[in-house]
Amino acid sequence: GIQVEQSPPDLILQEGANSTLRCNFSDSVNNLQWFHQNPWGQLINLFYIPSGTKQNGRLSATTVATERYSLLYISSSQTTDSGVYFCAVGPNSGGSNYKLTFGKGTLLTVNP
Amino acid sequence: GAGVSQTPSNKVTEKGKYVELRCDPISGHTALYWYRQSLGQGPEFLIYFQGTGAADDSGLPNDRFFAVRPEGSVSTLKIQRTERGDSAVYLCASSFSQGTGELFFGEGSRLTVL
Image 1 (cartoon, each protein chain N blue to C red):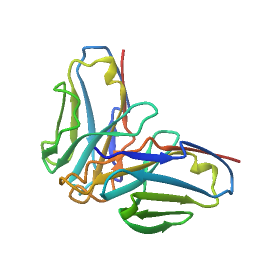
Image 2: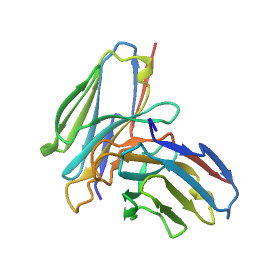
Image 3: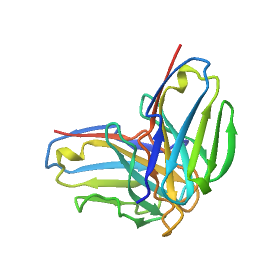
């Protein structure tokens, strides 16, 4: 099956700093989503971004499908950004693009 | 409802018992998914429903696991003869589109098998 690698595995920031999280995947995809799992375990959908660039407030994401990676940018980080960020992808073949494979996540800690 | 609702939020059971976990998706969402998340890992796909039918149950680990969605809305994940290895957070998600589009997750049901 498709492999998803996220980096870095852990990241500690001071409030106000910017960061870039990376997601590499091993095969062609037409479904890619970024999620934030808060310290209480709730998974929040940040972006549905199989290709191109999107922005939502302090967050933006870019997926370069031909090169099999996606980036999540967090600017002016806040303590509420802390948690685990997951990238999840669905394959572009076999008609199973609904079946998301998640990476292991990036654990972000933002200190005040 | 406003979001995906899952009950119970926590379930502690003994090895060998039967467990049911319930998911109420966002109104109007035809696609429903169950995932399982173990500690320190990302969620893993279990089953996908489109309407009332299970379109893909390839992620169910064995025949002790079964899920239904009889009226195309609420879904129940059923686990027979629970084992300690079944302990995990079971997450339900729904989406508006047919299998793609943004997934919206519930808060999960944490299952502990003693």
